[in-house]
Image 1 (cartoon, rainbow, N blue to C red):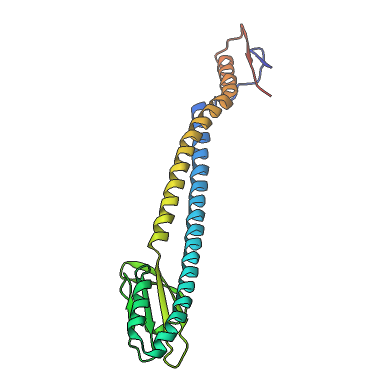
Image 2 (image 1 turned 90 degrees about the vertical axis):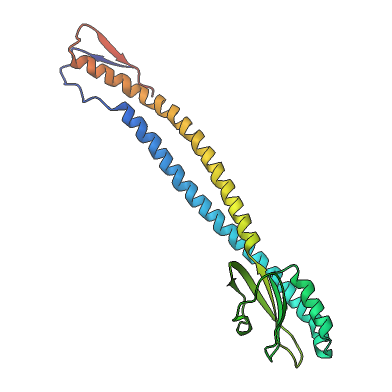
Length: 220
C-alpha cells in the first residue's frame, strides 16, 4: 500500500492515458495472434500439400511398375486387345495411363487429356494438363518393343483436402482470436486499474486538495 500525501512538495507527473494503454495491449495481442495464425496456416498448408503429393507419387509409381509388368507379355505377343483392356481398366481410376512405344504410337486412356510433351519425359514430375495439375510417373517396359508406361494422378483431391484443412484451421484460429481478445481485454482492465488509481491521486494533488490523504493500492 502506497500513501501519497498532499504535503509532498514534488510536482505530480503527467496523467497516463489509461484507455490508450489498454488499446495498445489489445492491438499488440491481435498482431501477435494474426502473425502466429498466418505462419501456422502456411506451415500446415505446405506440409499437408507435400505429404499428399508424395503419397500420390508413391501410388502412381506402384501402378506404373505393376502395369509395366502386366503389359510386357501382351505387348510381346502382339495381343493389342489385352493391352487396350489393361490400359483402359487403370485409366478409369487415374488422370491418364499411357504406353509410349519407341515408334511413338501412344495408347492411352483416362479422364485428362495427355500433354503434348509426354513422350519426351522419363522423370517424375508435376505437369499441368488444361486446368488440372497431375503427378506423372513413368516405368520402363521390358522387351524389344519396350517403351514407357506413364501413369498420371490428379492433384485436385489433394488440393481440395489441403484447402479444407486450411479453412478449418483459419476458422479455429479466428474463434481463438475472438476469445483471446475478450480475455486480454479483461486482463488489460485489471492491469491498468492500479495505474488509474495513481493517476487519479496525482490529479487530486495537482488540484491542491491538501486537506486529505489519497491512498492508491498497488498489487505486488
